[in-house]
Image (cartoon, rainbow, N blue to C red; front, side, top):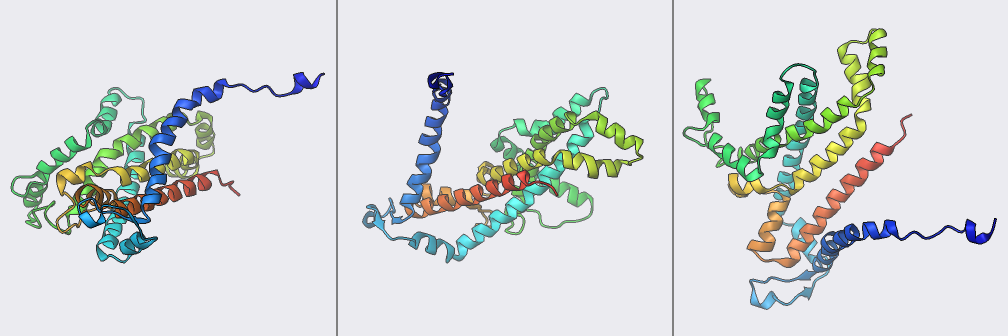
Length: 297
């Protein structure tokens, strides 16, 4: 056999096929990130004449952020929002999937009912919930009065309840979406494993804990990554419900980024927030992939 026939031939077709995607990622993902890293080392304020020209200041933007009590509060709000939406949405999505994973007549209507909130744009969903949170005749306060509790009535205007209101809307919106992934995973699980477990006398809880959960591990990791990223990038309902208030009690990281870039026109600070944003998401994604690929002992 000649060296020419054994030499691996170069096939350009795969590279040609991925070229449009690679160009799109490079233009709209890689380049903005690199530009943000570069701009984060400069002071530049477009609404202040003497700061319009970029001035190199090193790590001062990052130092300013992490020594600012207001930005620390934004970080706390973001963590509260993530911890309030991601686990609850995933658990509810899994429970909904268990409920609708049945072969009964009309089950499609229940699946549609659980998934329907995801079809609505976030702005529309927030507008609907704005009526539910209305102080005078909103459904929440009406239900509380019916139960004999007058309580705090202004959900979106109370600094202690504004972030909770935002979390409620996000959970309601996303749970049905995650249900679809779990439902697809449940319907693709091997039937013979459950039949063997039934023959061995396993009850429902044992089957769920010992078989269903482990088999859906990769699905859960994927959903967790999607939910985590989505909790960072979704701010539409905050604009409608609270506008980050009152007293910035519901301002999260992406909303703060929007304020710094478009309201205060601070390019340096907004670029530093972008870098922090990317580092957090990248660290979480890599950690989850490493965890999911870890061999079980």
